Length: 196
Image (cartoon, rainbow, N blue to C red; front, side, top):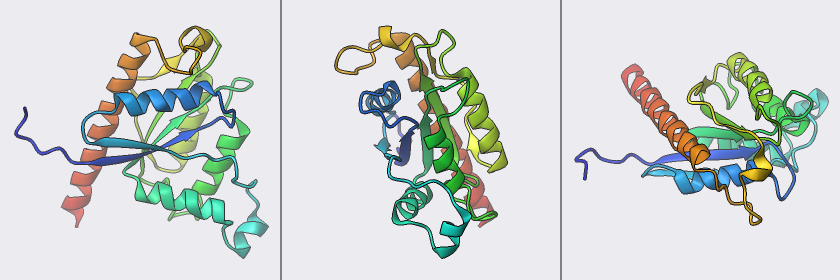
């Protein structure tokens, strides 16, 4: 047993799919199972977030948007599990990220540690969707974890009938990715302490 104290890390898991049997929700459940000591992952559903509309925003964020922003701010990191639709991000996920990028200069995503992964029936997994996701995170000045990548391809063959991830190689990549998320959180905390 290590003498080093385990610092708790709270991660907000956001699935980019609304489908109940989504492979990406199942991927987040696998991440909950594989989380390192001290890390907890809470899954946040985005289905009730309205379409972004500047007129609505100027009247005040709708309650589901307030919950999303509060949850991101309170988390030490965000873990996004995205499907890939037509070589890109699902609209529902991009919409949630649009809200989370507001207001400019003080957005919840700014400086937030963000991990990403995805599962798809495609033979290339969600590589193109994750590329678009990276572009959004760069714009928001998020501290995203680029490697190791978690790209679960041919997803129907890697989950059982109960939606449990059965592919051990994918689980290994998830463990490594979560370790990298934890390291980036600790790095951000050290920088914050030094700047205080």
